[in-house]
Length: 279
Length: 171
Image 1 (tube, each protein chain N blue to C red):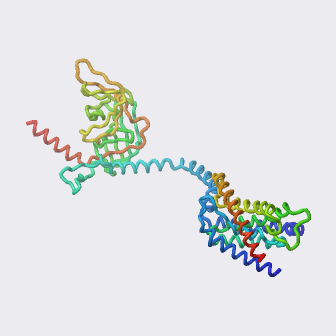
Image 2 (spheres, one colour):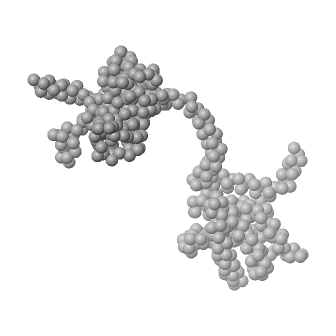
């Protein structure tokens, strides 16, 4: 101890210098924003990387709930899209903006059962009448069309998958709007067939096939798939198009059930017209 | 002795005032910031106690900092300059040491001695000051350029002031 005091006293000039310089640097860092920020940044570089790594690992534990939240949020967002609105053309405000009304409502649902290998395939979803699900509602996913609700119980519903012998979806070629019925011939879970496309349409492999505006069930412009190949049947003036489906039916987890609010109104009107014209 | 202390206190106040009232307001270009106040440390008597050297350097730097809003920067640079002053004096000392009663000025030791002595102290002071101010090495060369140009201007100012003061002292 005594030696230490002697040592410090001997070099008092150096130690005094050190003390005063420390005071100066303390003042610099304390009072000058720029230097302080720099200090915090460089000291943070270490802690930040540690925190980032730990968060990246932690993230995996919340993936499940996070996915569910995202699906829910997506459903809400899709409800707000212009395509989900019904344009009532007789109502304009002063700047000629059409008055918009909700036409489609998206409800997020989880696939609890699924089949792809049968001729008539079904899905089961965890939403039922208690969630407002009714028969004939459309089921889609973020990648494209899935099917149509067939039976509804209180908490579940079964969906007639696109991979079903009775499936008929009104589909159109996105680039020019020519439409036809899309059916599934059982050719495998990733292909379907689009019929009745006129031969004057200039088709090319890779063209997008989307839902047509004439469907009561599906909103317009929902992706179905892309043109894989097409051929003209002998003696017909229509193409038969082989469609590569955009949805991977083997990997369905979260889907959206689409409610068309005007479906009943439109359907009743159309049926009445057909009935009247029969006589 | 008392006379000497009073003269240094007056010089301290005058240099701070000149620095913050006149030189601070002179725009000499983006790279040029002369700091005349370091003259106070340069011309302190040889016999100044080392603790007094550091303390007065700290007080001088803090006074400048108050006016420049750069808390601690000038103080750090000036204290560093004061710390290396005894070493530099030793390096340039004549064979038989400094005569008693003389001061490290042009008047006593001539312009070549003074230029090398003051040149080293001023350059190191400016080096520390500008690098604390910039606080990063990415602008190393532009900062170094500022150090060199500003040091040259400070040395010029110091030499000119020396001649003015000395003439007054002789009268």
